Amino acid sequence: MDCTIAQLFDLEHTLAADYLRQFSYPWQALEGISEMICTLGETLSPEEYHQVSPQVWVHRTATVAPTAYLGAPCIIGPGSEVRHCAFIRGSALVGAGCVVGNSVELKNVILFDQVQTPHYNYVGDSILGYKSHMGAGSITSNVKSDKTPVVVKADPALPTGRKKVGAMLGDFVEVGCNSVLNPGTVLGRHASVYPTSCVRGVVPEGHIYKDAYHIVPRQD
Image (cartoon, rainbow, N blue to C red; front, side):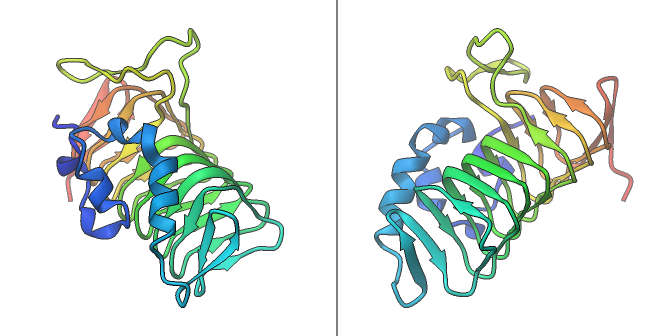
């Protein structure tokens, strides 16, 4: 499968489009997310975005629960909802119409427009494409147990050179409840993952991950 940014994402659905166009693979963009958000935030219209604290910008149509924590730097896009006890540790670009749900933790991420992480999700060092959805309790694991650099298990294998790489979700991906996406997982556009799965490697565009031995084309 082609794991490039061009293959996974429609860049019309993120403020990070110009930034992402600099790279071939999405994990190459992880290093500079924080700096990108700081630079981008300074260009946002104060008529549209309220700077609620240093390097934290929230669109005036977004809803943020009083119990949510917004760590710098971050941007919360128009119409997005940050719910009770959400924990945005920082370096998070949340697009338009997104849901960051109760007790969800985000760190060093780009969420394209209309991404949903609604319930008890951890998303770290990851990029989630347009209208992708993380089922309740599903998480990204971003560090290998032996702490060695993450390699994307494609054919051929793609070394990332980074110790922290979560998951790259293409547009319209659906991840089932209580699933774990292991370091360096890549899910192609319109891919789906069965609930309670433990996913490693690459799931091609338009395929369903049932288990490691059953990854089948969608029959829509």
